[in-house]
Image (cartoon, rainbow, N blue to C red; front, top):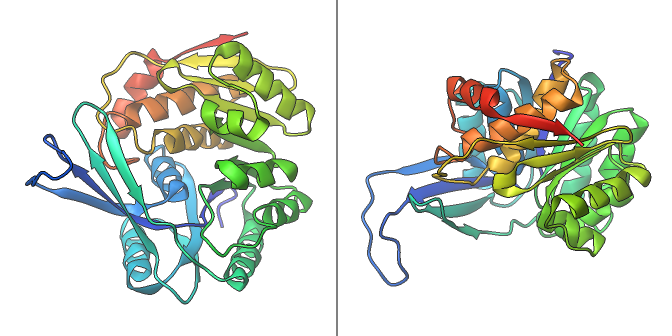
Length: 311
């Protein structure tokens, strides 16, 4: 197994159907030219973006039923290695209605598992992680996951000296923070809710990042929408700013930020270049519908136009 492998965990995998509907309105019949169907869930968006950026991702997560088999086949056809944990049930489907002006309406099913399914997933991840230093744990947990999740997984991976990156929200994020992963990548609203403070400016983003670093997390990245993102470590605060764009579909942009970060760090870049790569990846993603469907050449152009300020 490649020592540069990055495990991309999606506990709550979905089949994402993206419909670009210029005249979308409730109660209105619309006819569209095509729909984009891709394996979804935050970890699989990260997986695709890492692949575009020429990294070495491995897909992991829970799959079940007909939809699960379809997703596994799609991931295999995409050329990505995977180590799935199968359960009795049906993988969820999510629908994204995208408008050309950049606004999207998202309808997410919840997903449902048994507590034992989560235990099997944790065991499978720790087995595969023996040969991968970097693990991305992304997105929500399905209904039925135990109250100890995902802290139980993070604690086991910490003992194995793995660099765990968490990108989640709500109770899942709060539980993850308590387990002290290596890094978290979240947006301002997500970390603000977890810490009980507003995070809507550079100053309070820095404050939130410092609080988490002082509490034992090594790297904190807070995305700020069109304003870019801030990276905080014990010795560094850096702010990356993207070029101005007119977004087409922002779905998956936060996931692409994480992909750019971990791919750059795996390639040996420092944190300053990693935050530049992350913001460039998230920015170019917003120019294409479907989530992590951007061309590498356009990413390289946006990367040159992304600036970083060390604060």
